Image 1 (spheres, rainbow, N blue to C red):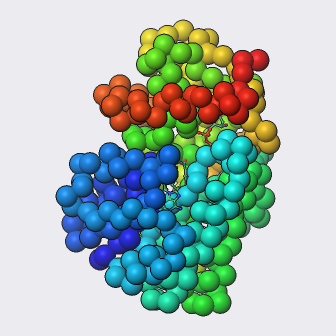
Image 2 (cartoon, rainbow, N blue to C red):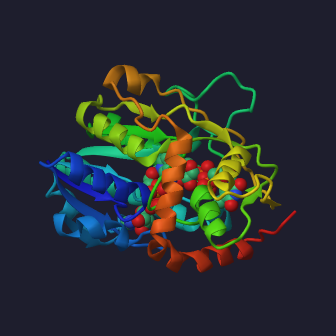
Image 3 (cartoon, rainbow, N blue to C red):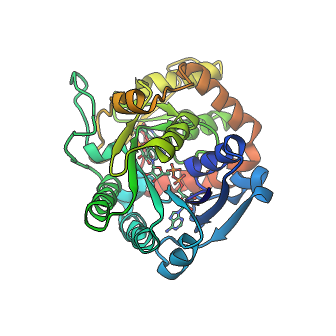
Length: 334
Ligand code: NAD
Ligand code: TDX
């Protein structure tokens, strides 16, 4: 199978490429990535001689048409992915997440190419802390941030292109990922790299917001299961029963550094900050037989801490600019 992977120089896309090369020897991979601030070619260094890398924009319709005409399937990861940035400047989110997805859909429609759309649980909005329900495939869309609204829009385009034009698409909406190669703007790598630098972790609000953590390799194994065995037109929720509040995660990171669990600061909360995400992944488990292999968040987190300790040359060039952006966005201690 010839695969086009968009966003393959980003966090989840790069891990997907690594997994594809390791576990699917009959697959050839072309990566299309515009190398925004979030993309990093170094994330593909260890597989550079096994893939084709195209530096380009998913919204470049001529380029996308040409690349899609030469493959059997597209797995679409490329996106503007950070909520805080979407509040500071929503336009790149509209352009990449909506127009970029449109561009891919037109190409897969024209060339009748299989398409898998990678999306997020944030399209469903948020849950109360004491809500007994979790998100399922039939939960109504209710996005809160410009990021999640543009991801929801892209999902709707995929559904419409499947129904109206017969595009052979599947969709997945996954919970919060953690693991190697994640940009230092995101919660877990930000706190790990702060601690390496001797800076105290920063918790938004009161640290009570809950995220449903999954290791990136488990997410990508689910994407592979859906690509190979998913029903066309179907959405699958991906989650590993990993609900934890942010304060607990910071305390676990502090523990990994041998620090007191109160060694953090509360900072300005995110406007519109979603309280809780929680995924019911029964459909994926029952229909496709997927189960997460990282059952123990603590062990996965410890391995991730070690990865950032061992790979400072990978994240260091992005660290100062990321922290300066948070200051420019008005973050301060409360
Ligand atoms: P990321 O920000 O780490 O990587 C995004 C990649 O897309 C980067 O390499 C970037 O250069 C590339 N890109 C951005 N705009 C582009 C454009 N116009 N053309 C080509 N390439 C472009 O993101 P991530 O965390 O790896 O997320 C990947 C996908 O998974 C996204 O669609 C995101 O919505 C989804 N998702 C992420 C999470 C999570 O926890 N990170 C959870 C669920 C779903
Ligand atoms: O310094 C921080 N302190 C803090 O308390 C940062 C950066 C975040 N937070 C909080 C906000 C969230 O409640 O931690 C939680 C996780 O924050 P992010 O890493 O920014 O992730 P989130 O907003 O939950 O979105 C992530 O998961 C869903 C990804 O960035 C999205 O791309 C994905 O769709």
